[in-house]
Length: 168
Image 1 (spheres, rainbow, N blue to C red):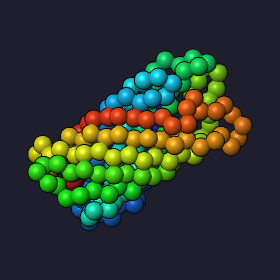
Image 2 (image 1 turned 90 degrees about the vertical axis):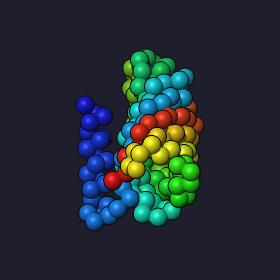
Image 3 (image 1 turned 90 degrees about the horizontal axis):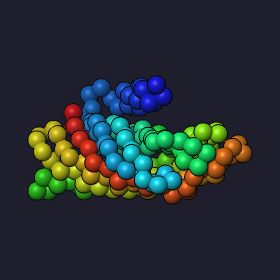
C-alpha cells in the first residue's frame, strides 16, 4: 500500500511541475539489485522531462526482502537533474544527480526519514521510436538520522537496474 501512495505522489508532482504542452516527457520502470545489507531486489518508477540536454526526473524506489533486526527493507523518493546527449547510433548516455528522502524499516523499528543524495548514470538503448531499454547505476549517499532513531544499515547503498523507458 505504501508503494501505491508514493507512486501517486510522484505522479501528482510530475503533473504539477511539467507543463501540459511539454514534449520530451518520459516514464521508466526499472528492476534490479540494491546493496542494502546484502543484495536486495529493487524496483523504481521514474517520471521526467528533458526537453534538451538537461532535464529533471522524479523517482520512487524500493528495495525489499525479508526484514529482521539486522536486515531491512528500504526506499526513497528523489528529485534529480539529468544530463544526456542526443541519441547516437540508437544509444543515449546520461548522468544524473539529485537529492531526496530515504528510509529503512527493520523488525524492531526504522530510521525515520533521512536526507540523501544520489549520483549515477547509464545508457538508454532505442528499441522503437518511443520505447527504450534503460540500463542504470545509482549510488545513494545517506545522511545521518536527525531524530535519534536507528541508523541506516549502510551510508552508501548502490543499485544497478534495467528496465523500460517510454518517451511521450
